[in-house]
Image (cartoon, rainbow over all chains, first blue to last red; front, side, top):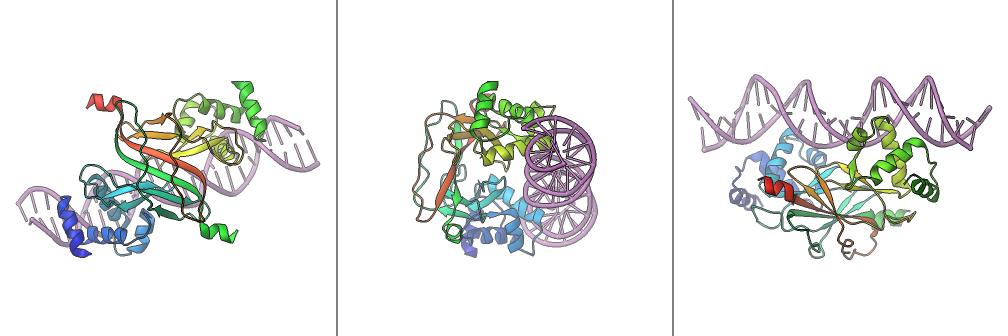
Length: 139
Length: 139
DNA sequence: GTTTATGCAAATTCTTTGCAATACT
DNA sequence: AGTATTGCAAAGAATTTGCATAAAC
């Protein structure tokens, strides 16, 4: 994992500092996108502002992309493609309105919709909100 | 407009107070979804907390729905259908990363994607991020 | 030695709640 | 009278910045 990340950093022209690698590793190791605060909890050794700055950097270098969790917050997720200019690998997400968890819906890519003339897309968010199986069972 | 809104309120079992009507009218009159702060600017006479409470109420009564603007904030938009249980009229939006404007993409409804077993959807957000025609021209 | 990254603290931004006063039924 | 609504003020939550120190090149 470590070497792969370092290669990824070089590919995107970022310095692979220990902190950045830690943030990237945590993000890459998660099954669902994480918020800044969740990252802070998982990485007790790095300051919030620094995680934030790493994420901002990753974002501009298209190493991570941002998804909305449906409640005004943002979550971060490693990009799967290696593009340096756009986030072209996005998939849909499901946000449970009861427990707040966010799931990846990995079943193919997001269906495209036609854009009016002049609009230029760099990324797409597709978020379904509702109730997840666990919460439904419990209710 | 006023009468139509009052009828809408009755349909959704909300009391048509002056403030609520004002909030609804402002939302209905906008060409794009508004954030709480934008609403506050447009309605100088009503307190922020009150606009917020009206929106919260509207949300639970499916009179408005929430969309993400791609930067961690939320925007509110009048529902077009008259359902009292779900937001079934959603359309896609475009958020310009340069000027921050959010546009409605009115060209048909959002393509559905299949959900895994057990997931139950109540609403869908489809947000395209990128550069709008105005900003592209200027650059 | 100059540039880049980091940690801490604090500022900012935006959302949400408590509570007393007011309006409605 | 009793319930629902409102405005003000303040609490909360989360993001973002300033700045001094430390590390990397």
